[in-house]
Amino acid sequence: MALIFGVLLLITSIYVFSKSPSHDKDWQIPQQRLPEIRYDDSSFTINGIRDFRYGGRGSITEQNYLEKQYNFADVQHIWYGLSHFGPSGAGLAHVFLSFEFVDDAGNPDFLVLSIEARRSKKQAYSPLLGVLRHYEIIYIWGTERDVIGVRSHVREEKTQLYKLNTSRENTIRLLQSYLEDSAELIDEPAFYNTLLNNCMLGLIRHGENFSLFEALTTRNIILPGFSDYVLFEKGFLDSKADFSTQRQASFINIGKSAITDSNFSERIRQ
Image (cartoon, rainbow, N blue to C red; front, top):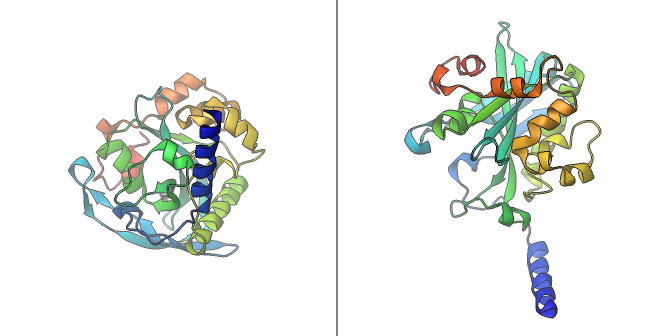
């Protein structure tokens, strides 16, 4: 039995590690386009900011992509988002970030980063297959009304938003790191990995004092739905309020907003 298991493990390993990532697949529509990024020390431009519109049951009614330039000096805050796949206490969730800028009129302007398993039209998501180099990885840059709204209002997933307690310098450094990684994917496709190269680790590995060993042995990181407690422990949340109070206040109340609201970002933060 041990010999059979060993042979199967060897065959599986050879198959998995012989695969090469590719951009040439029939991708699901929301993940078809890779964003094009240009940046220097003071600003960056993204061509391909996703701004889709959705109908019932998640059907896509409009496929919009924006091109926009941002100045690093205009970064104000960074928001940490969690969208739960099931009950909010189950630990299964998707992580995203929203960078808050200030526009020329002094109003807040948000840019979302969502690191995802890029799937073809024939693929469904499986955490197990995600370990076996079954999916490529994609960095989605989009509007909040798209990336957050499709989760909170269309799929009605329980969705949270936290404003992080971190310096502007650190926020800019994180943003620059994500832009570099995203730009590299144009020429060098990479595999998604449920444990090593996923939405959670792809975000926190750019943080200060990141430890891969800690990430792979901490339940609150392995199960991203609990990762907000890690933020609280590491001082990224408000130290003046207890965790349970902040967590309860972080959930988006879809009764106070609609995905069609022009001031969607303001309303979901009420």
